[in-house]
Image (cartoon, one colour):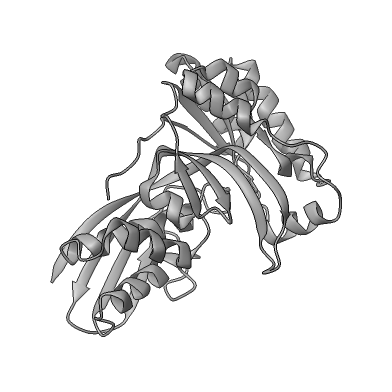
Length: 290
């Protein structure tokens, strides 16, 4: 039996804009996304035959096709013409579930990278990204990671200059937020404000972290939802500790602050972990070679 170990890195949205509704029911998105050093660990064991199944340190994580990593492995086996092969996936979850940090998508991306390693790089980078786009909206970004502009459903990617050196304090309150529910609420009222995506791209080109942080924006924070009051409180507390900027990532519920001083980020995490529950420090992660 052959085995391989892969890391699945979480993502943060530095901006999130919804520009319209598509005929296929999805929404047109414009996002600047960043991979961070918080990760799940996945071990893949390849067998001659059998099912594709998963196990996790979290009981509620599904072990069948509802799990994106399982689905990604099945797609890979079909693509290389060996659908009869069996794969066992051991998932050690660290990325909080229901946080807007693409934990499931990151696991699926790690699954595609891991399978390609087990099969000696049988698929090209372009083939892997095509597979990723078919598995889930954020999977293509999570495949290569780094800093990127994402459009469409999130699958149309443009690599961007790396984020200037910084740290993140990432906090997740006890509740999660349903993505379909939040999109429904967004559809019921006009978007009041959009991110300054052009200004953020310019700040990245010029390596201006403060200018970038002044423009962090997520349209979902404007949705009429009582949970956004908790999001606002966490953002305010992160600013108290010296964050240059704060934002909710994805559809939430995780909130992050951007710091330049490690001692300030650590202290924010130490204190807010007691107030919020989950709070971890992370760093930007560069793009992964495929």
